[in-house]
Image (cartoon, rainbow, N blue to C red):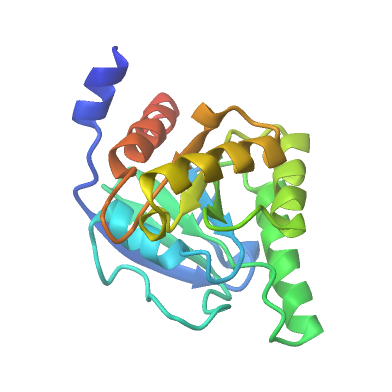
Length: 207
């Protein structure tokens, strides 16, 4: 099947919230559907990306307050696969114990979840990847998870600024520029390319 055909066929028609879990013991049964996990620093735009990607504006609460996502949130897409919203990391204005709990929840999920077929790491395109972003990238690479990097808030830059930022992020993360997906939840820029990529992964895993 050609990449073009996959792109034309792969569209998100339905998306519904399933559950919020404090840890993996409260998540849906493992391997029930392929899972695509979305992660990134607090306030990087995870909720906005989920709403944009699924074309459901109220699917995930969008807040200007960093650290809003504190649980593992499951959304069932087309009754065929899950989008999983993981707690944001790098938010300092919560207690150390709360930060550690978020970290444990993420690590347990990423270490133990058998249904995970793709990890999407979000980085703000306006800034250099933070140490925590590089640490997460390294952590995923060591476990050989299929991973893509999405550069959010692309609408905040001009076209030339965006291309320079892609080059800078690719160098910092030691990736090819083609491995990065500039994205704007405001304008939909990059949505088609990201959906095409996700579609290739989930359809090859039985969705």
